[in-house]
Length: 254
Image (cartoon, rainbow, N blue to C red; front, side):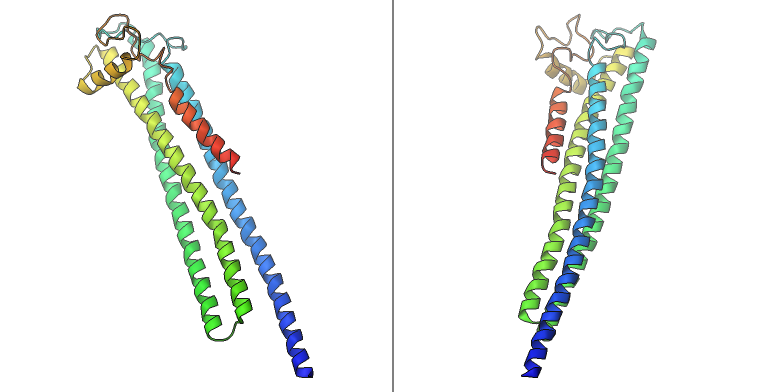
């Protein structure tokens, strides 16, 4: 009788001790995952804010009302006011280089995140194997086995959510950056061709035709057409709208 009582007391004590340990471990994992998610969210919030500022700057450069001289007309005669256009061209090239650098940093951060998650996955798999081995060797009761298995899967679910969220933000940021760089590259080509008086190549000519087709009387060869042809197209509005939608989506899911 005494042995049975002692056994029950020991079992209860072990369960209580295990519960305390699991609670402490649960709190530690939850806090670590939350801190990592906060770091990633701050990084991408800053990234989206910077991308928005660059798109607004690009929008300003493409509009005749910006602080730089109005873009020259698309007759591709040598531009006399080349010196007035060079600051805008320099800014466009600067934006493009910054974009290349940002994509490299985003890719690097993504690789680091993938590596951290791979390490967490490895630790999780090892922990599951240990729990399984303890149960098969009769060092763990079915009740304790189920509890430990449930808790370990719960812990790993925190890291899975962090990784999934980080990867989605990475994809959004890269997509927006590539779109911005494509827009910037087109504008750089247009400015350089206009400054030099060189006629645009076939690819640029096609882009100009696509742009101008949406404008009243839009003809690439027609006089009076602005270099960037964005005044009535609301340049970068689509990119800005997408960026803000993506940012709002992540803010709503915090």
